[in-house]
Image (tube, rainbow, N blue to C red; front, side, top):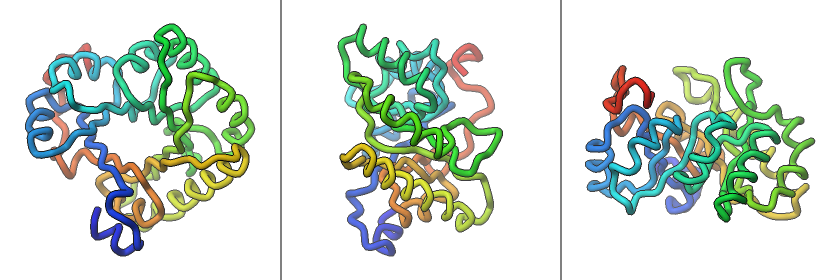
Length: 223
């Protein structure tokens, strides 16, 4: 991460590591926390709901996976930021649950920059169409955008997608008349390219924890 920041003439402090702990048991999270990691990302609300109470209370948690509307209440309760808001319907449900909890919720808007049918996220034009309505929800604080680049063994193939997300963030900032702090992009295979293109949050699991176990230790119902 520091090397990528150096190449891009960026302050290393401008990029935050989100340790992706999907499928990892609480004892692994505790070991990672003992080594200095403090921000963890979970993909599934049910797994996080079982895991977070068993981990040190000082840790911070982001939801980085797809969120169904029926899990919005728990997401509002357990996570300080939701990276995966991909529709106005979901945003409105988060707004309802946040209102009940009297909380402000930090969110990122997920964009399917590459247009992959298998991935969630706004189309760029649809995001711009709904941006005003999203910004009008008083309990949601929009902090930026998130994307997943198509998988490739060549990290450079991700660069156009990361660059497009950065350009889209600039378009959103112009429409909102306010800066957006975050670009959540880049994973184990391509995070250095993401940093070079402006990522502020990189989501890294495999490089930290190795390949995930086939079954979470929390049991099949938490998967």
